[in-house]
Length: 115
Image (cartoon, rainbow, N blue to C red; front, side, top):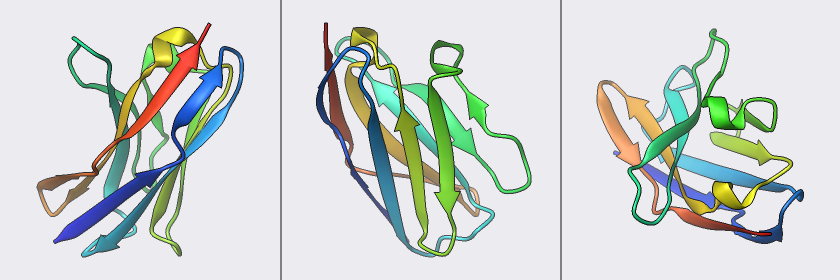
């Protein structure tokens, strides 16, 4: 069993930054694939960024150059640094982990960007 807890969301103005954190506990491994997804009102959940040990991070085109995903395996924590935020980045952001073929989700954290 894996538990994921996100934090760091909030309300910011366009152009500002936020850093999201996802603390993992349970049967998580350093080579487990981790990712951030987001879901805006009325839209489907979409991949924002993912990271797997030994591979280059993967980003959605809409966030390339602005967001950076990283992980601290010693702390079992994944981060999403979000810079130059835009109103269209407003969404609930979810942490995701793939462990031994199963997918786990956090409860989500709201990010709201005002114009």
